[in-house]
Image 1 (cartoon, rainbow, N blue to C red):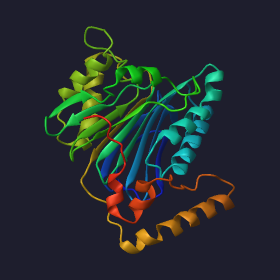
Image 2 (image 1 turned 45 degrees about the horizontal axis):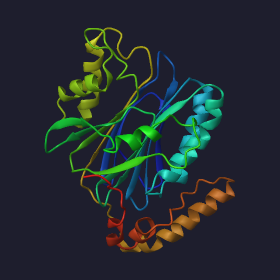
Image 3 (image 1 turned 180 degrees about the vertical axis):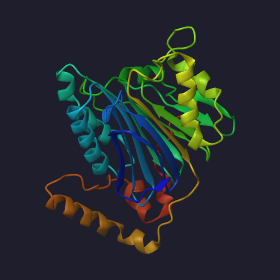
Image 4 (image 1 turned 90 degrees about the horizontal axis):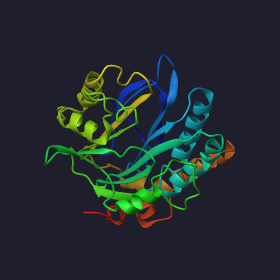
Amino acid sequence: MQTMQCMEVWGGNGLVDSGVSMAGLDAWVFSRPYGQSATGGDVHYVSSCATGRITRLLVADVSGHGAEVADIAANLRRLMRRFINYIDQNAFVREMNGQFSALSESGRFATALVTTFFAPTNEVSVCNAGHPPPLHYSAKKRTWTVLESASREAASGANIPLGIADLGDYEQFGVRLAVGDLVLCYTDSLIESRAADGSMLGMQGLLEIARGVEAGNPTEFVHALLEAVAKAHEGNLDGDDVTVLLFRPNGMSPCVPIRDRILAPLRIIRSLARSAARGGGDGGFPEISVPAIGGALMSRFNRRTGMTREP
């Protein structure tokens, strides 16, 4: 497992089977493009910064393959870097929606699941744009459930693919995770697989398979889950891109020396200057909020995220 540093963006749309560790969070990604393709329509990214407090994780399913998807993946990487210091992910998702508008006009579409983990409070914010909802494993209860908004009416109104409508804000919700909990994000190849009787697995079928897989070792869980889905029916996972992203809070708080906290604004300004010199707009400027800016100097400001909206 590799260690991610602040201002890193890791991911893409190619073959990968690896893990990353950062302050507060461990993550594992398995992605396999369809057939023998080097790249596919599934895109995944993980980014970390704001002095190690913010981790953003993205899984997107873009219709199509090849150069067009590669261009989209590159644009998503730039957006991940641009909003790398934002706790609130609404601005990021709005920009994504705009990026995908041209795609929808050509008769194609994309779904995406965006999650933002805030290490000081172990809170995760979830935004779903027409994507299958993630699964949540409670280490305390030792069981899997679907991680979705309690406000189903609100969720159904905004849970549509990217680029379809000019939405001001996609619906999002926040939950507090415990150390050792797991969150599983994936693309639709899993729920569109078949059960033994030939029926589509769907959410409940995938949930039952997940409950039958040992979750004690996350590094082995993804492989065991995919093996169980593949064994459920002949041909499962063979006809589409397959991507699974698993993450868990690890309890490691960001350890940032007071000198680095004080100098954080200068590093941001330097990053913006370098970005401007390259003619780009992806320097990673923070959102104007007390947790994003004040939290870099004083830890108590980090408690004012307001992410958790449901019990």
